[in-house]
View 1: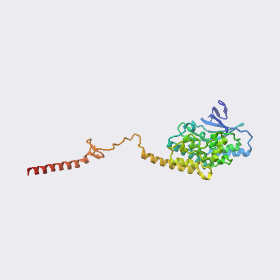
View 2: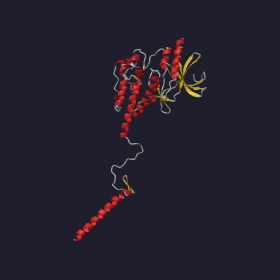
View 3: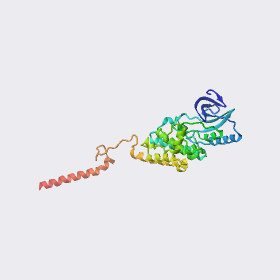
View 4: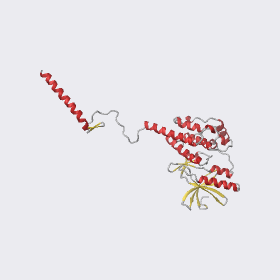
Length: 330
């Protein structure tokens, strides 16, 4: 489709393609900006109720604004093509940055991602399809979460679920695997998988294919992340383990709780690092200091303040000399 123009969008190149449609980079000639277009694979005629629900969901997603959320501009219909117009993120998937070995960087990334989910959940929008590739790192090294609003769009469009990969299955919560509609606690579970993978480049569950992975997610305990990251702080380990609880009632009941613990962990880590690190450029002071430096100052004491002390010492010396002479003359 490169070189083709749809409405006032000139398609420049194809970016990706998946079960939910193909994504293209395009020039918005009306607003003079670069955008991303996601073409939805419509395979049936939409009813009036479907169109109404589709329009409402698109409106809700377009109202969602946050510095760490990829902006959803609008849903367009051009002849038989339904496509989403969204912010173009100039960067790469988080996958290209992992594993993140620096704990402070990892905590900052986790906080940024959770703050995006906090905003979406507060607006009643559940992601429902969190993956490593759902997170983009732009050219300024800032994170952007993609895909908010698409979960409801898939339901309205009645997109048939295709067989996925074992990795895709690993992010699904046990209740989603069982066919239940995912809620914000399902997103919490997926975030637990994401942070585990972000830190170790390994998945917490095991399976060679989708059915085996489904079985592992539902029945197996996660592989302890300390097996891959023995240096990880106990606080971060605890956050991930709680997010990966099988029962929704045992997880964080909202991403707000998870975010609060991550911020507390960041403050605690920063306080510890201040104790054991010296600011860059600061010169190390000598372990021992001379009592007097004949350079106009002494250690923290001006030379003039030393004069009374020196005069006192001289007086004592003179008195001692006089006394000794008197004793000798006797």
